[in-house]
Amino acid sequence: MSEAMDFKPPNVKLNIPLLTSIPVLIIGGVIAVVVFFWFFCRIEPGAGEIAVLIRKTGDNLPAGQVIALEPGQKGIQLEVLSEGRYFRNPYTWSWKKHRILDVPAGKLGVMTRLYGTDLAPSSIIASDGEKGIVEEILRPGKYRINPYAYHVALFDAINISPGHVGVVTALTGRDVLNYPLPPEKRNTFMVDAGLKGVDGMLLDPGTHYLNPYIFNTVEVNLQSQRFEMSGKDVINFLTLDGFTVTVEGTIEFGIQRNEAAYLTHRVGDMDDIIKKMILPRARGFSRIEGSKYPAVNFIVGETRQKFQNELENHLRTKSMGWGVDIKSVLVRKIIVPDEIASINRDRELAVQDAAKYEQQIVQAQSKAELTKQEMLAIQNREKVEADTKRIRAVIDAEQDQSVRLISAQKELDVAQVEYEAALFQAEAILLTADGQKDAITAQNVAEASVLQNRVTALGTGENYARYTLYERLAPNILSVLSSDSEGGIGSIFSTYAPVEGGAE
Image (cartoon, rainbow, N blue to C red; front, side):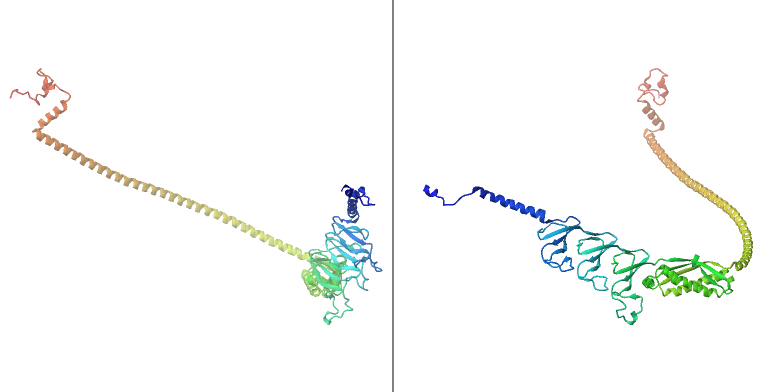
């Protein structure tokens, strides 16, 4: 049994150190793979960055092509990697980091495609798959665009100020000369959408983003403009009698919104409108109308006002169909030759002096009338004050009389009330006295009746008097009648109390 257990196959060797090193190798391999992936395969674009992939293996790009458009082609790939973490085989791929395209506020970006087929002849904007300028624009913001596939140029956005409009001219599209138009559209200054030329579309005030390679925008001022006819822009004309007259003034005008594009394309900017339309027509009218009157007429105000009104109506009528609105025409000064002006100046001075004297007379009359009115006003005021005082005195007297009457009436009423009260009081006293008299009389009658009854009971009045005396004195004098001496105090009552058994 022990021999069987000790049996070992021939040529079999157990290498214990080799078995223990295998896990170490596996762990080391895993760590090496992790380190390789983390440090050599990791692509991690940071905030505001993109990564452009470049394939090292695959099919070669066709001649002239810079971007790999098909899967498996070598070269720069069209798609980019945004912020995040990615892993690629460094044997197959390489990459480069770039900043994200940032279009700031107030700007726009125009992209130029750097790959694709060549641009068609006489074309400015590239179609899909063609090299060249792309029609789509980039508004303010951040964009992840491959810098090897597109070149982006920044331009200012179109800002239309308040009181202005933008006239748009299409730089691309079908050529009017090579495009058949209906009869009503031929020989016009405005074009329809899709054709080259001035478009009828107007841009309102605000910020607009248009591709500058496709559209050209001109800002047109719609606010009122003032053109000064002075300096080199004055109007000179010959009068009927051959004198030269100079006119200075101001023309206020504006551009109608609906005709802004038509006027801008047909005439030009604001200076062109003044020099080509307004000023020539004002000069032409002035020369024709001015030659109808002698020079002296332009010194008088009526002729000047008539000339101003006719010039305004003429300019408004002629400019209305062109989109120019003439608001007002003011002739500030008309200069005539001095030899004419001096005569009329003297005459005007004489007229002015006469008018001044007349004015002084009118002022003196007005002053006299004013003085008269002031004196009348003073008289009326004093009269009103006297009437007021009289009325106040009458009112005060009436009020005093009324107060006194009211006071006397109150005193009369009080006296009447007191009199009536006295009458009531006297009547009450009389009634009280009558009552007391009746009571006393009744009491006296009762007492007399009692006395009468007592006298009757005692027989005589003398007996009643004696009875009353005894009754009053008995409680206090016990021995008044018992005196032995003759002529004593009791003897004064002997008449009323005779001694028993005395003389008859």
